[in-house]
Image (cartoon, rainbow, N blue to C red; front, side):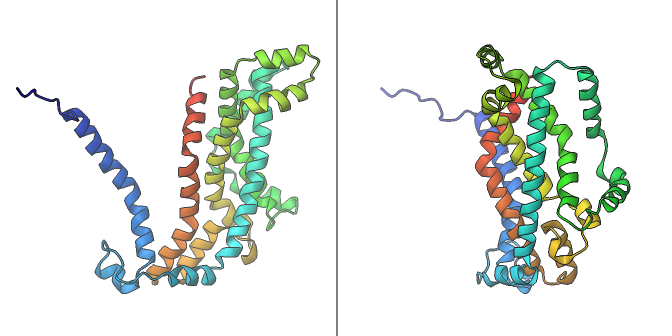
Length: 279
């Protein structure tokens, strides 16, 4: 006597899986197409745009790297990004600790004034910032991008870090204070290790934002040897706009490493953002 078995997936589950598969394909396909186009000749890109390369032209990456001087641009972007992210996350974590744990005059007012930075688009302050950096002698130096990059990311980072602090019980901090620890010791030895997941999230998100910043890099840096990758890509496209294989190769070189970093660490990003949303 045979017994009926239930289907492995219900119709609703199959529908959800199908929709998810379509969305994932739509999200990844442009990147895959860019990488495959970087491995073709210009003629093949137009003749068979959606097919695999007939000959895998890895030399396109070497040529794009050399013609675009991408090595120098990479180092400049790494310097600017590392400096700006370090300043931003460091100051934001300290400020968030103060707003969440300490009592001082005008605390609420100071916090609200800081959040006003979320309302200002970069073009509105580009000219005043240019004048200020010129007067300080910082134009055409890495600091012309590090300081604005850190400051521009500060408001959102403080907002999210404070939200994370509010989800952490202060029991260990109070115990450390009873044991005689001062405020700095509590912050550095107790609080920072507890909020490290949120700090890692902010490091990743700010790295992506600052790495891709274009406006300030166009305005504040003049020397070719000091430009960052986004500006270098714009100029590379201007010089080689008809050589699509080289353009796609340059885009792949500059884009894929950041995507790989994000996909490797996305679990920490989601966990950190979820925790801050609980505030």
